[in-house]
Length: 408
Image (cartoon, rainbow, N blue to C red; front, top):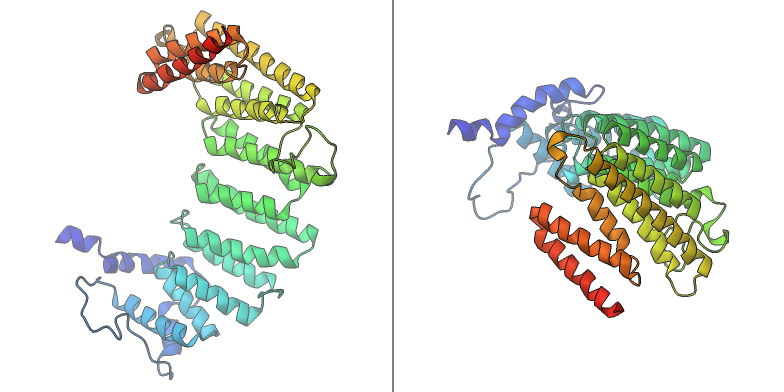
């Protein structure tokens, strides 16, 4: 009973309310909002009003929580959009920052009081104040969906009404906020997703270039942070459109955008740079899966583009040379690891991540029997050392052997 009571909604609210009031300066507290509503013609509306049956298991809310939300339901019913309604949403969100209905109601109130509706403008000070409010409430829960969406809705208004310079300035400020969140949790999906939305929405070459540099800094901080590698992929690929004068008017061939396939394809020289970048990351830690997957993605993209019907022979040759050059470098890395293992206990253990990447690249050349034989041998090795996926590697080996038989 003591354990249940300690985790009841009421107990959590009573502990959270004082802290929330200290954090949220400049906003009305629950008591102030209640004072504005008491004595008005707007009657509070209970949660179970109109219900014929009592609840099977009622939640033990704090009295303050119940009263604030009773008033909220009354204002929602009449769709009142006033300052006191805004103050009441503040009080309710202090108690429960994850209440989507309250956030949505708050945005409707803000657009009524300060503009910002379809085609309308909203004062920057109002937007900044509410962004600060969301920041304060998100301090203890940076993975709150509603908080991130609220920030996005407010920034959409700002981006829409600002000139290009103003959009870039606002975007940089918000990116600074996101960086603060990622400093605490470098793999926060909501923060990375919000960051992508900002850069994509403003679509400024300066921001795209800065995002490549930012992802690089995060990779240096933690080379195993797959979110940072994913961000680099996003910035290098989608950023190519912004860096070109216009994707649809760019040069033909393997440049920045494959309009037929609807996908962004890196120019060959950029792909070569990104492949080199990935290999450098892999050399720092060959047992790190992230750079290897990034490398495979870059090279496979070039190969698939070159193999499409109607593509020039030169594109096929260039993609082939790029891949074979990387295969040669991976073989050298493999030999170096075998000759000089990074630790004594790894002397007899093949590097699964490296060999797996090598297999993926060798299998590209389905008409080259020698490369397929090498891939088959490596699959057999992986089946022996990668115990969790041994059945998978045996199946891969069978598939490679079947392809070799068609060449005999």
